[in-house]
Image (cartoon, rainbow, N blue to C red):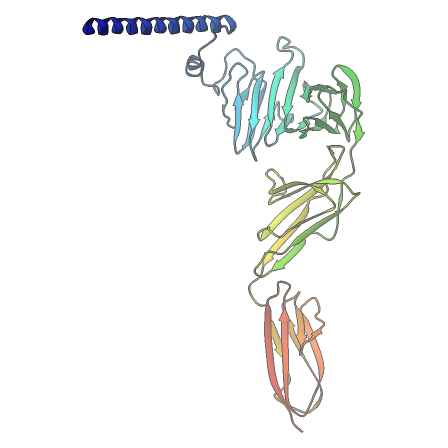
Length: 405
């Protein structure tokens, strides 16, 4: 009985396991059918990536709308009919609905012609769309979707129409020369600034934004009104601002004039400010730092009013020079044996240095010449001369003079 009971029990377990497996397979098939019903099939990802042509290759039969140029660091692009992003290169041809993306400290230039271009700033996304692709006879019309920061320059002879889309709004530029900027803010709003030219319509309705005015664009809210740009700040003090130091970098101060409020400050090694070393929003009219390395810098500042950036100031210069060599010093001391009473001597020092004789400061002219008058007493006289440059380096000279009758 026992062997028969074991066989019967084994058959029961096998039957239960088979039944459970069949139920699992049935539920899985039902789940697959449900997925195919709710989510229609498309091109498999493997075929989409492996079977698609090289994104950078030219597309026969399609019209080239713009060219990518002056790439800086990490710039990517995506064709309008693709989901794959790939690295961009200088001279890349752009077609309608192509997208360009820049990452940290990156940038690129989208050129529609010799003098019609849009500069894309860091961490930005731009999509260029042709609006009248079927009309080859008339002027080209484009819509540029912006997320991030762009600056545009259009010539007076341009043969294209341009719309700017940002923060849920579309602004149309009036024909003619124009310079503009679009900047997105942290609250998902955007500022459209017109430096020259004019915007004549927003969201299909007439709304004028003349030169040197700006417009705040917010999602779900009407655009406007256009506000005049704040004036450019004036740099304070002579240029260049020069600092000399020995060991530790000095604490520099750069100042400008203007009303209280927010300013955007930029500092770079080149006057183009293509990749600023410092790009900060400051609440005040000065910038201070003690972390700059020696060398020359360029700096500029603009006022930020209601989120709009006004024109930049004139470009200032900053020079940090490290001096480790003591200043040159030459002194014409009186003879070692001299008659007691009034005496004088002269000397030269490196221009810009200070002179101290026996602890007292002596005037130095622009050429570095100085003279000193004193009284020689009878006996031993120690005359000490110290030269101190602007960085704190010191040179010394001394002589013992005997006052003898």
